[in-house]
Image (cartoon, rainbow, N blue to C red; front, side, top):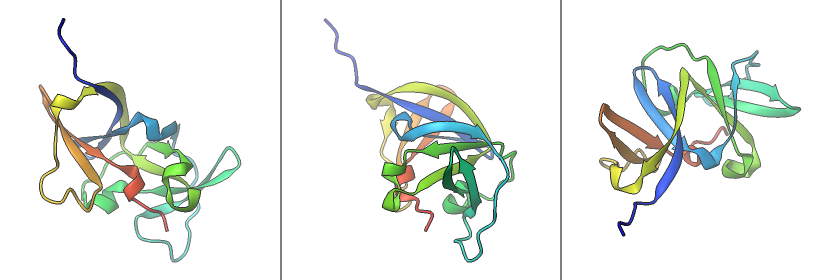
Length: 143
């Protein structure tokens, strides 16, 4: 009997022309971008806050965090489990488009090049049509 590689579920999303993914275990919901309230003196990557089900949620632009200079639609917010954020704060990422949830076999994931962006990049997923950068939202704080 053949053994199969372990498989993780990831949510794929677009930032500019590139595809990124996060473990689905971190994601609580995906919502349309609503009205954001700007917060003075917030870090430059914090676009603002929005009310999601009675909870103030910081909206982070991962393009600023990862140094992605491309413009995009920025139509969706991927909201993460507050337990992964610093001090249990609610955080969402502003993404251009949410694509799909897929299984990823461990054998198709390579280590990130270099230092992986201080731990933000956990791996690179090889696909037939290119690569998907696997990022860890727990490394990005909306402080």
